[in-house]
Length: 372
Figure 1 (cartoon, rainbow, N blue to C red):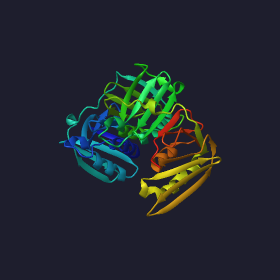
Figure 2: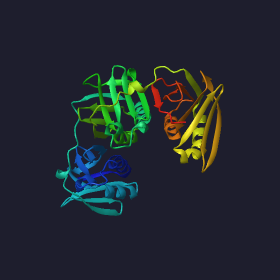
Figure 3: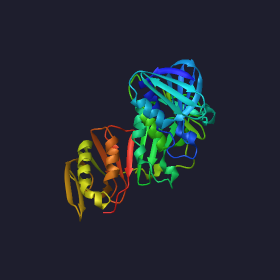
Figure 4: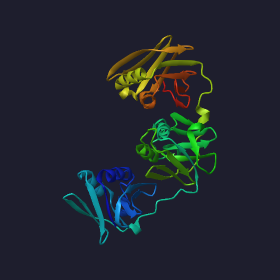
């Protein structure tokens, strides 16, 4: 292998790919990235046997070939080079020679034949959606996924493809986030018209980092099979193993009817919760909300810290209510919403609260209350 390419383009591609490199592994090859020059492109691949990523970089190819080198070493070297042309050549015994201006390095690697093949998801069901919409789907739900590996199903995000469009759902059993993309914003690319899979939250975090919303950006192409799912964005591709099992029946926890509601400015509510949470930290971040005509009151109390009291102007309908919630569960969702105001609906002090963006019918959030 002998290629020449732009340093900044190579650096960006390595950043996208290297994040999925295995941190701790008994297989040294999984700490490497595969470099494969073919057809005027340099293919860069990382794979930890659960999640894989690849980037394709345009290069001038003097000789095709492949080898693997440690991802961290190569990434650090390329990041520190000046913006100039980089020349890379595979030498004997899987050694990579790299030069840029007056800088010259040799990096010891391993044969390309030892690197596991990245799974292909070419016979699955799929769709296309804009990068902006995919970003909204991920950001609006991923924070609600569980971090408890003992409940593997809940560490993933449910992706549903149906006639009405695409939907993502996440829950940790204390809160639930549901975000939809309507059918007119989704393009069918073949396979079954209706299907559902559970995607590891970690994989979606990497997909989100690949996205750069904009009207002229290429769409996200999604392909899913029984065990794998792939996300293709221009020259970047991410492949992930799916989580097996049955996702909880999330629809049954969404309140069908509510008799009390409060509409309040989102940014004001978020700021007030963050301030009150400073006092509430020592008390499991518990905040007490009181809704009465024209006012939403937020309070927190700690024997060691003191008290917090916040009042916000609000539009309140229905009977007065006093209810407690975790500050963290509210700041997470209010931080990803973009609407000017939010609508918060209730049925009682011991029932879940239903939170919606006032101008976004495709998003809802359900959160369980705490004991008063």
